[in-house]
Image 1: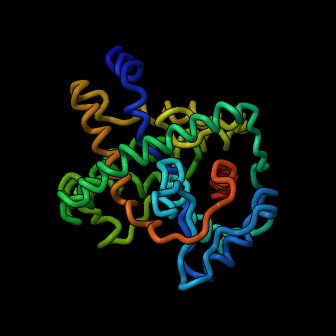
Image 2: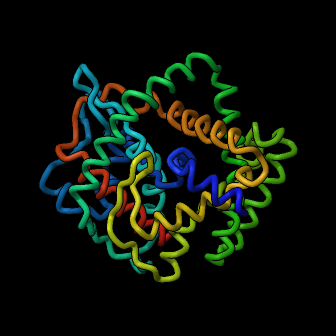
Length: 303
C-alpha cells in the first residue's frame, strides 16, 4: 500500500494519462446528426452553430488545428468523442420518465482551465500525436489491437467494483465472465473473444459515476495538466479508479511508468485518423468540450 501511494505521488501525471470512459463519438452521417439534435443542447451550441459538415458526408469533430487549417484531435476531445455512439443508443432507448442529473456547466476556474486546456492540446499536438504516428507505422493492426485489448482486460476491477456499488449485478456478471473468457481463450486478453465470438458486451462503470448515483454533485469543472476533462467529483473518482488498476501493485515502478505510457500511446494511436479531413470547426473549442463533457456525464447516470 505504501508503494502504491508513493507511486501515485511521484508519477501521477503519467499514471493519470489513462482516460476512461469520458467517451463521445463523432457523428458520421446525417442519421446520427439528427439523433444528436434530439439530445439536450446548451446555449453554446444554440448560439455558436453546428459543427456538422454536410458536404460529402464528412463527420463532425472537435479538435485542434494543424498547419493546413484542419483539425487534429486533442487527448481530452478524443475521450469525449468516443461516446457519441453511446449517446445515440441512449437517445433511442431511454424514455422521458427516466430522471437525469441537472446539466449545469459550473466553471468558476475558467481562466485556469482554459490555460491548462491549451497546454494539453500542445502536448497532444507535439508529443502524443507524433509518437502515435510512429507507433502505428511500426506495429500492424493486429498487434496494436491486441495490446489495447490487454490493457482493457486488466481494467476489469474498476468496472466490476462500480457495477456492484451501483447494484448493476447483470453488468458485474458480464464483466466477470468477460475477464475469465478473455484471460483464457483470449490469451491474456489479447483477443476480445467475449465480444467477437460470444457477443458479451462490456459494462463500463467508474467511481465518478458511482458517486453521482449516490447523490454527490459534480462540482466545478476542472482541467488539469495531462488529464482528461473532469469535475471535482470525477477527479476523486478518477483517483479511485487508478487505485483499482491491478498492475500498480505487482510490478516495479519503472514498469508501471512504461505500461502507462504505452497504454496512452495505444489509445492515441487508435484515434489518429478519426478526425482527419474535417472542414468545419467549432467556434469555441474549450466551451464545446466542456458542454459535451457535462452532457455525457449527465447521460451516464441514466444508463
